Image (cartoon, helix red, strand yellow):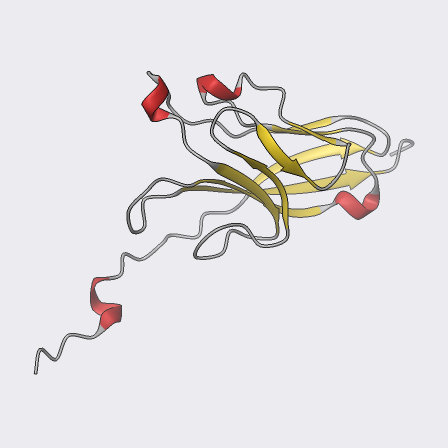
Length: 130
């Protein structure tokens, strides 16, 4: 009997406060997310999702790339202006509204267990007059 509890070797993920982004209703807003790319083999599949990053993939996925280009998105308001191939996978949301507020997850899917790069961002929306 090895007696090893799976939990003992799972690295503890520190939940840092999400990066805060603020925008006014009707504006375009950029949610920053980048990773280091020095050559083409450093390019990875990535996704954006609504909500805090889960243990794998993206929950409520809104954008996905194949590492070089966007292959799916849930709205024409979502854009990755890039350059994606240089590791800039920041999400631009145009014409933001109150329904866009909340948590977003940027996840770069790196092969191997627990290797993914994850970034949680929180979008605050305020009225034009505010």
